[in-house]
Every structure is written in structure tokens, then in C-alpha cells.
Length: 200
Image (cartoon, rainbow, N blue to C red; front, top):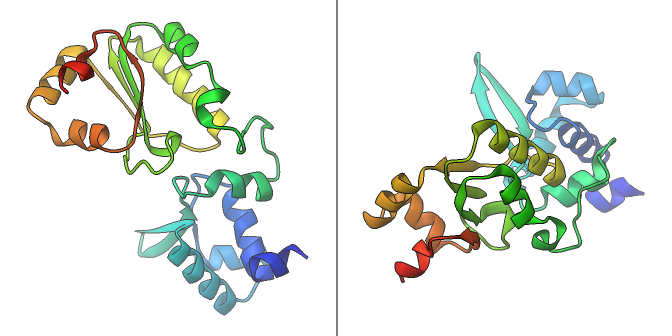
């Protein structure tokens, strides 16, 4: 039944393989062995999935490797369907902002004067950065916070941590990284110094 919905049995097997192994890459002959399908069928479906954007490829040791693109727009709902053992805490239907006490979590990390979320957290955001933290938070607390977020979201996150002085300087010279983030759709979670308001 489900293969009729998603196109083919090979594609279903590929979705199961990739969505249950985020961060892991496979080469074509390895894939054919793992899902027990003909190589021509596998190559055809890989090309289709590449065109859609759900998988990406890279070359290493003269071999072409494929893996799921965790930044794909529909990655989370697809993983909810095809993932064998999800953690049960991935929320797809509710707005992301309502699923987490951001202020409480930022207080737990400590030392954060400015926090901006974009990327996968904000619909239609073109930013490559999902979360920017500005201040002097303890690195170990930041790592713990990000790991918990990644577990909740079911995907890897791109984040950056800057000191307040570095952020202020880069903002003042209209640094490309800061400009791209703030000109894309984003949500300011915290701005204790109202630094962004002053720039308007």
C-alpha cells in the first residue's frame, strides 16, 4: 500500500535506509546489498531523490556516497513516517516556538545576551544558521543545550556562538554572515541590550 503512495518499492526501501541512518553515507553497491534491489533500479531512484533534494552526495576514495539531507524541508515528517525507532518527542504539527521554553533554556545555559533563531526553526527562512548565541556562555552548557535541541528536532543543527564584542563589531561593519542572518526571516529570542533595535 505505502509503495503505491510513494512511487516504488525501491524508493520505500531507500527512504527507510537513509531516514534511519542520518549522518551516515552509503555508496551504490553497498545500498543494493543492504536493500536487496537491482542496481539500475537503485540508481534511478537515487537520481529521483537527489532531484527532490531529500538526499545529497559526496565523493570520497573515488566512490560516490549518498546520505539523507537533514536540512531537507520535509525531513522531520518523513523521518516520523519511515524512522524505525523515533524518540517520540518530535513535534511536527505544532509551531516550533511553542514546543520549547526558550527563555528557560537560555537561562540554564547562562551568559547569553542575544539569541536569534532562523533556518530550520523559522518557516521560509533562507538562513544557513539555525541558532546564533551571543555572549559568554560556558561551552559545555552550549553543547548540552544543542544536543538536546538536536534530539528534539531529530536532525543536526547549524549554530554559532559569538562574544558580544565580536557580534557588535561584525554588525557595525555589515559583515556578510550577520547581514544574511538578520535579513532572512528570523526570530529574536533574546536581546538584553536592544542592540538590534538600535541598528534600525
